[in-house]
Every structure is written in C-alpha cells, then in structure tokens.
Length: 228
Ligand code: CA
Image (tube, rainbow, N blue to C red):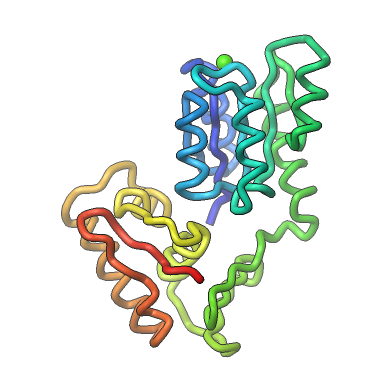
C-alpha cells in the first residue's frame, strides 16, 4: 500500500500542485483546506505524513501542529511545514513545537517531494511503518504479515489492507467510502462497490476468529476495530 500524505493548504492551485507531484511520485494524497478540517482528517485516519501550510483559515498551521503533538495517536506523525513568511521566527517556532522540517514558499514541488521522502526515511530508518497490535492480532506492514496469537494468518492483499486501515484508525469508525478509496482506490462509492467492502469485512472477520468480533459494524456509517 502506498504511503499516504495529508496535504493541508488553503490555496487550491498550490494544493493541486503539491498533490500532483506527490501522486506522480507514488504517494496517495488526502487534502484539507483549513485547520479544523486538517485535525478532523488526521484524527479520522492517521496519515504517514502531513504537509502543513502555516497560514490557514480558522486555525493556523502552528496551532494544528501543536494539537497533533498533544494527542497520543497523532504525536509521532511526521509534519513538514510550508511557510510563506521569510521570517525565521515561524520556522524556529514550527520546529520547536514539533514539525520535522519546513519548506519556504515559493518552493519547487520536486524539492518538497524530496523532503517528504527524507522525513519519512528519518521517521522510519528501516523504511518500515510501525507494527500495529490489538490483543491477539498483530500486523507488521514492513513484512506484510499478520499473526493471530503469534501464528501467521493468510490474508489476501485486500483483506490485509483493510485490516491495516482498521487497526491504524485505532478505534475510529471508517466509512465504506473511505475504505473504498483507501483500499480499492475508488474515488467515489456506488451501492455495488459498498457491498464489496461488506463482503471483504465478512471474510476478514471469519479469518480472525474470536478477534473478528472486534470489527464492529456502525450502522449506515461503516466499520470500526474495537480497541482496548
Ligand atoms: Ca495558506
């Protein structure tokens, strides 16, 4: 599964430009155009990295960064700040409150993509995202392996991605639309495609045995993996 970047930028042209270059480089992108939207998106599903513009409506980038660092589930998500100001102070403050790097505007998109790669490498020296574990279920993305009570479990690639998304959400509800987009790459869901999610969830539950009961259906919304 491609690494996912949340691009937070209120100027549509710049947002599109960043997404274009990141996707061209193999990243998956989600976007947000304000501070509160950014917080909602990160909390819904923690991305692999956040590109965060400093000047945003409602809640600026510094405050978004501060809030993400305060919350245990988002405290370690790598953040690259975009700053239009030449003012050194913002950069220093940004790094002090926990941004991993900053890129000054105007910037070259290629430079930004290179920084994204560098920060991700630093965040995970072995290039592997973290192991996710809930009671008897452990998922290791770097080895593409799931174990149930320590024993390897055979999952199809879609089942694996589905479980990965559910575990990463750490108890939050994921809508069918979100899962279709993330696991299947569909831009939007119609009824038949939504049933695809249901079918795969059913198979995944069956394979997980007792632990499968922890994947709960949230009526007319989607699914959640109940965490401790
Ligand atoms: Ca801005």
